[in-house]
Length: 192
Image 1 (cartoon, one colour):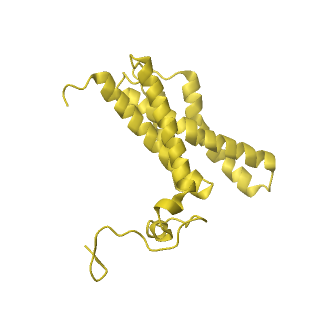
Image 2: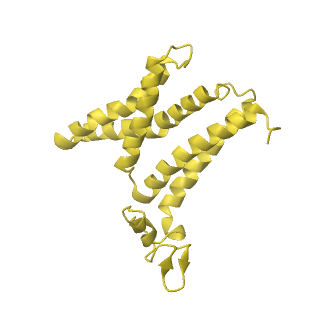
Image 3: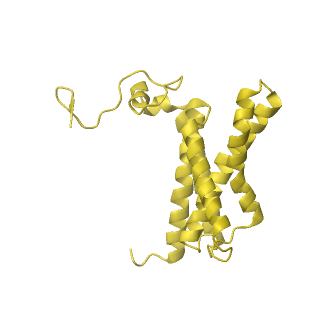
């Protein structure tokens, strides 16, 4: 493993982090046609914590462009607008604005913030020397997003309704009836 080039290590770090965040959100969108509040709050905390670090440390240590800082403000703006949408009637304009900013915050701002963290940890991420690695990174993340959405929309192929219930999640409308998959079950129905 010592023979792996540093730019390949950086590529792997960025790809895994961005793909994981994208997969989770895409699966929920596919399975439930929504993003759960827990993911929204996790995204807000993640992005806002990174933004605070960016604002508090010298810019030479964490160089993030102004537009990047504006991106990282979007989850907070989304959270500010949510109570307005919830408590002040059914305005299609406000609801559309909240949903648009929320989706932008989760699908663009969260991956961007993870990208910033990865860059702080390993400054070579933004400066991958090979253009093909940058292109591969984007392609892989997009592919995982598409597969995540497809897997969520077609969850009945992979999971039973019991899998969602045992995880404490709502059952998607199209889940396959049945108990959860139990990998460690012994004869007699006991789990060890």
